[in-house]
Length: 94
Image 1 (cartoon, rainbow, N blue to C red):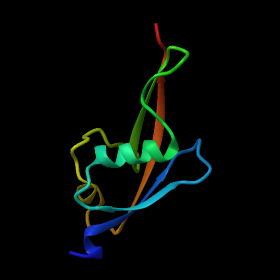
Image 2 (image 1 turned 180 degrees about the horizontal axis):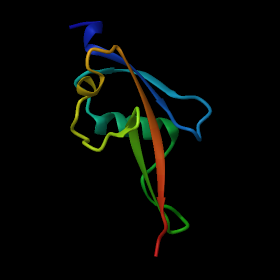
Image 3 (image 1 turned 60 degrees about the vertical axis):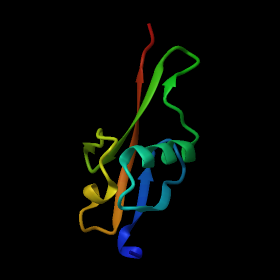
């Protein structure tokens, strides 16, 4: 299929000047998108030099997208545009 199988995806990350914008297949998973978004913003999950641990979560409206196997099409429904937010959590190291 053509454009009906594609979504315009925008991910806002407060620490970045510009949002991530791309087109994605409706069959792309949250995990695949998250990897592309983190790479685009130059972010990595895991232990930071100060010993703290950084994790990132994508949100659709106010709902965290925790199922990395869920498809973007399932989240978007019949919408052609998917607006998400990326949030950073820092856990202090021991």
